[in-house]
Length: 300
Length: 281
Image (cartoon, rainbow over the protein chains, first blue to last red):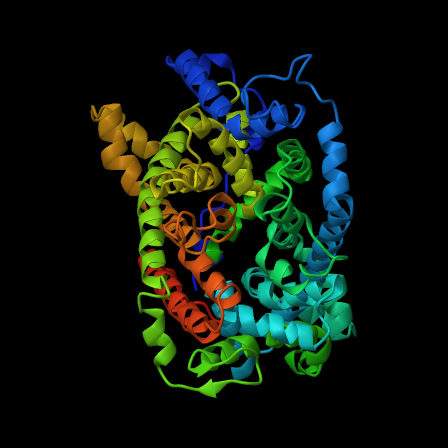
């Protein structure tokens, strides 16, 4: 597997915020700003489109899809209310949050400990485990799809709690891999000193090693959060048929994809609601997200 | 120290390894075995040798066509995504006001999940196409165009970030030396900058290839393979065969194995190409 060291780490998008003196700007600056402004606006068109139309009455959307809502077509929050009633969206937000937060917490805690163990205890089977974890990053989900879903069913894992275990199992490879890469760079002397002072392996890990893992922890948490939050196929197959346990992507697929309701307004509103948490998340953690997602490039 | 730690396997690695066995190792082994059997569930598998593989490459499965379509989407996207991402990165590593805001905007779609992203594009493209009395599923070429646009929107900002990191690592002295030697901007770009960011280019080419190959959600949301499965990509074809067709589970699993081999081959070639150093556990 490629190592994280061979991957360029992302440029923090915000570190250069301190304004550079304007005399350093090149000659083409106005042109560049204008070009980028136009391109960014084009980039935002799909988002603007659903936002605008989510406030229009459903019968007006197809007429002039790119027009702003006016007195006649403006529907206020009607689409949002209809959409929420149609789809059980509010509950889906709850389950998406539960599964995402639960999986990320479990993955971060347990894969870091696993990575520590297989890095520090060197035998043939810890090496084997390491290579198996690395190998699992390459395998497409379709390869294990049918058996995984059946086994999850048989073991009673077809619940949001079971999903957390499945995410730990199927997604743990990347996290173990990233943590292991970092743990290798921690000098052994620190831990040996702790042992000399009478710390048990658990005390050494939780008091000494775990705090050092913080940068990788942030990366692993963000990568898994984005993956679990957006994941559709696995939860759809495992818990999607259960009326109680739908996640946001499952609800969106049901509302728009299947032959069901064709209320365009409600569809737009639900798409907007599905995107808002991501935008908020991005606004708050932009620097870490950009770095974390790019660090995950090793996943390939 | 290692000896003291060794006994702690159940606490440190036990839960992860157990979950890994349940969700990956055992299903992987079973999946491999099931691809040589006729089955409808885990317990009724009958060994039938290579028949599933023959059927997978037969006309009825549509697998070869799906692979070809996947390759087409990937081939176009690799060019457009990487040319676009490199151009943006090149411009956005210059100094001008607001460049971090622009970077943020271009990167943002990457965080939106495939299903939500796919349907956002579906409703928008259908609204546009309505002017010509068309929808995205009327003509496979429209579906292809839509998929390529969507892939660009999603991946371009991501690749841009990797290119920006690469460009920022080009030593200033080299660029200054080129300028002193009288090289123009395009000459410097060609002879200094691009060779220096070759590692980033390799990574981005393979990332685009692998991500496009494994794409499922976006394909399902945008066209679901319509018309007549002509815009069906490989992952969608496999899931469809597994869950929507009757008695095709074995064939679907064989297709999944072939798909796995292709994706692994891509990863192995990438490993060679990036010439990364060996890792030791």
